[in-house]
Image (cartoon, rainbow, N blue to C red):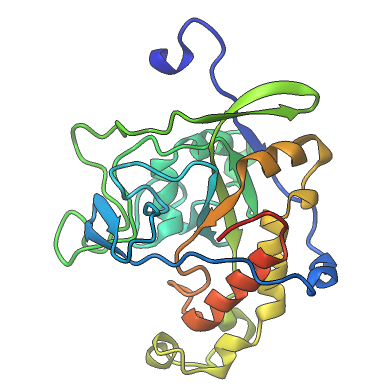
Length: 279
């Protein structure tokens, strides 16, 4: 912290929630599909590298704690940021574990009254990976058995924390914000809409019609989280300056058993509806 602050003011964080979702994205359906970079990552859980020379780093920070500047990290959230673990421990899902590695999100949760958690969607401009190590990898044995990420008992600070920052304006103030962002957004769970419509094995094999019936709400929710104009005017400029690309894993198709192929297309389409945003 003393290195971060030095003798003056440290960098600025901006927490924001978008306005209520609407169907305004439909007015942009004539947009062309944006170029998308798909990366296959491989290696140890703590040092993931691109297996197909895509030139990107593992989006959660599995490339030795290093991430792509100006890329928003997608927290594959439920109704609240941090999920069922209640911000207290790691679990086998990305959302519940991620807040432990991006602890500035925990700090914002303290502003919620009566022990409530942060509702999604929620964006934290400037949030960085302070802890080692989390990636899209897991293992059959400890330390990552049934866990997404692991905090070692020693040397647990991220030595490769991002240092790049962006100068932008928030409420008429010129501020410096770290060039990293955390965006929590939930998908639609088909098993809430249609309980019992698909068994677990069929869902894992993308073999249920129920998995492919909610693309409009999902496009709406993704657009709501990533379209700068959905946020208060005081932070729209900062959002556009910091969120220039999206890093995500299988949004909608993890522990909620969505159709992974359909959700890839949903994310691709929804991102293409946002101007100047890469995927």
